[in-house]
Length: 134
Image (cartoon, rainbow, N blue to C red; front, side, top):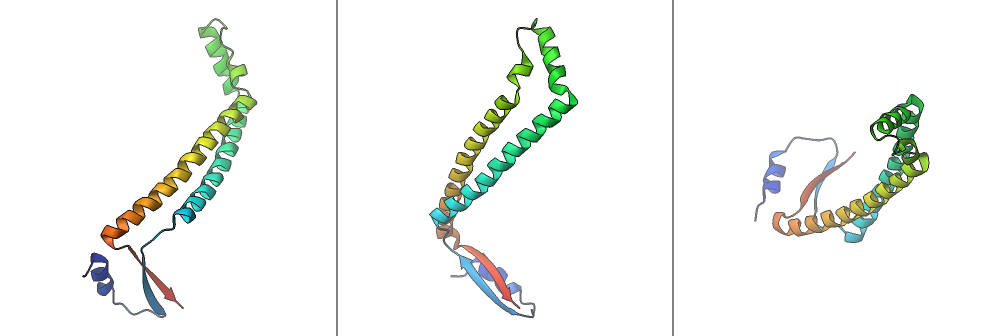
């Protein structure tokens, strides 16, 4: 039974300097995918926390938070104190919540993608990957 990948592999017959090996990826280990996606999500969480902190520092240094607080205070007759709501502890707490939710979502998505790939391999035959040694 010939697949499209086999036909494409036969068409690429150019000469190379090293030995070429074509392997087919037919299974992705579920727990490996979960661990790898969790590690990527941790890196994304760190980037999220640092970026929230740096954006807050830039907004604080440029005076945009104070200006927005004055504007909101004029509109609401000083009923809402935006500078108290947008303090560094509140911003970092929000960043932590966003990071934790991102951690959960990315880890689950990694597991789902591994499961979908393992199901799709049964239909398509897998991913043909070529390697060459020098």
